[in-house]
Length: 297
Image (cartoon, rainbow, N blue to C red; front, side):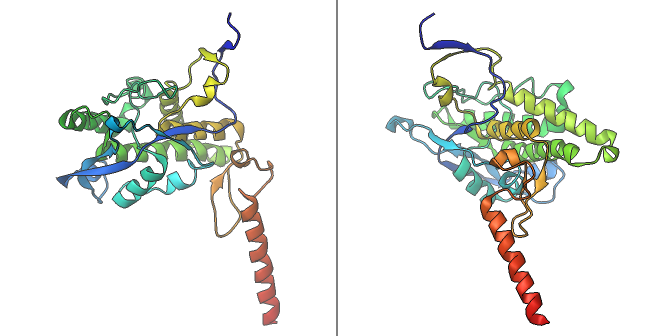
């Protein structure tokens, strides 16, 4: 075999940066109300339209490399309001376009062409994986396909408001359901908790299976150039958190409260703070409070 090549069993990367491809995103308002909130059982609503990658392929624009911030999945993402259009635009402008469980969308290198035409990942939405839980996302992907056809193939990805909202809701449900199972004492775990966690793990696994290949041929450090879409990256962070460190806890800094595992932030296993800054800030607040109490005496 030529030097530099090797066969690699590709299990979940236990460490290292998670890279996503990111391009500018704009919202195309098609007029009227989307009705997505009502269809999902919520009272709020959003305009009818889609998020579109804002690139001109004729100018040779490429995807920008973006390293996902540590703990994004259990912090900022869980705080994302899927029914706040400005919140959605801001989040995607910083981290990339949100797409659901699509088929063949993940580029493994900078040169591999990704599939732009939206199509649901049949494995993720099969009945055994809880299709009734994630059916809204599948419908949203089909809606994105309609927009893609309407706009014509412009060399960019399109994600309907229905796809984005349902994808965020589903992912938040998966994250909360799987983490809660680890946070709850064994006697407090119900059959419904187990059912939710199992459905979430199955769905996340189906999404990750497109990125994590059991056997791969790689050349030297080429594995480092692999990218994935934003939601796959978030599920990768979740998987690491579940596997590498089950000790979920909230940051004890009263001004933070981030849900984290020490392994997410390279902290000691007994640490109650997700960062040195939070630890120092909490210490300062304790001393300040102590001083105030002494002055009152």
